[in-house]
Image (cartoon, rainbow, N blue to C red):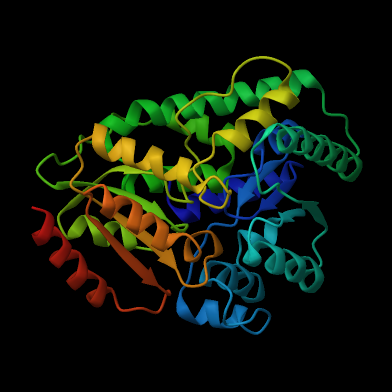
Length: 353
């Protein structure tokens, strides 16, 4: 589906009485709870262009990441997707999340549900996170005047597990580059019900181009209308593994059991995010994938002022370099010239081939 078709589908759902809950573009919000409430979780995943980001700077400092600034800028610009949102869910994932959430609620009059996220993934943190999920459930029940049952949550977990299985199946065929991300973007805007209905009618996906140089991609969120993945692929790379912030897909499924406990355990300990304190664990997982898939190198994508990666990028680069793995860091804002990025990508490909 193209964006106009997705927008019309969302409007149709809204007219039928379904609520839409906006969430910040990261991996740590249990969307299953939102879906179990009958609402559609809409991830604020549009990025740029520069003039939109500049509008966000009227609210946020220029030292805030461009994704957060452009998110606020889209609200100021009257983005048709974001104008459908009934409730907004924000937290403390990063500085951009904290500031953008507050300003979106204050200036655009959207009720805000606070969802603070622990900084560690140990047992006490998992227990605390489960409490947060319970509080989120209560907030949605109070706002929408409904009751969310364990059965509804379990059914939602089942739907999202079907989606994870789908991505497991298509990943070997198409890789984890621009086509993979484009399919994810439909999920981010449509929610699981419509997405599952649509994928059942799609044809087989095109096999990836094996002759391209296979690499890993990691780092900051790649938003809708951001063409960095296509740029990388046009320079002769095949993104075979991707654990960037924009990837909802996780390697495992949510296990059966008491649903709230299963969600807490899963989201806090199976994420891809470098935002958490266990950076070495994340690096080890990346290195294992690069080694097992026999990839030629890794591209580290860092949006300027992106907290999780600005603070860890040197550690990531040093760790991979010390183990003999080639890595290219691309730090950028949305106004950076694509031609400059192409030049660096072409030089990197020549170096690793």
